[in-house]
Image (cartoon, rainbow, N blue to C red; front, side):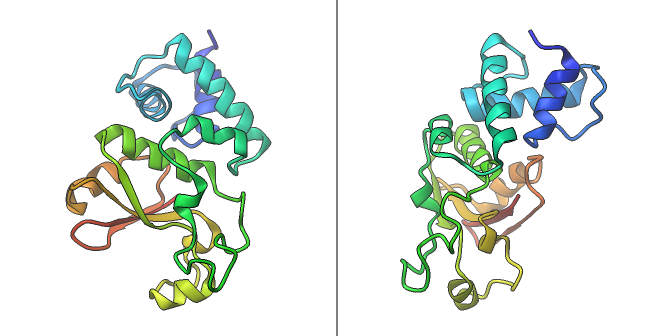
Amino acid sequence: MMKIKDRQKYLKKIGLYKDKVDGIEGKNTDKAYKFFNIIFLNKSSDKYTKDTEKLLKAIYKSYCKSKYMKSTDWKYFPNFKESEFKCTCKSKYCDGYNGRKNKCYMKLIMFAQYMRNYYDKPISISSGVRCKKRNSQVGGVKNSKHLVFKAMDFKVGNLKASEVIKVVKKMPLIDYTYEINTWYVHANI
């Protein structure tokens, strides 16, 4: 098994650990294990196991090569496809990906998979990447993270946004979030 300091380093690199890399296994390290296990093993456990380590090494290696999703990375996220994040202009104003095909940030998909596994409910994505024209049409800000494939608007099953946002705010991958309406939440990585 890897040393605790190496685990922390790997978890920090992929965005799940925000504390100091000190080799001390405390509550923040345990939280990072739990986030990782929910995303990749669909288990709500803060235990570091052989399965956790095997996947952590694979995800870290892939992420170090590129922070963007590669075709081989989608196997780690069984509930999502890149097409679910396409621009809602339906290729009227862009290629469907605002010129960012294969430029989807892995952290965004990690977050989506976390929400899916945390609630054990389907995630409905109403907006992923957007082109400038579509972003303007829906009232998005000029520097929207949607333009660069770092944001999504979504709902979780039949849960109210006010309930979901409490969980979103605890997720270390998220920089900014808000309720769009009764059902939908916006999240930036």
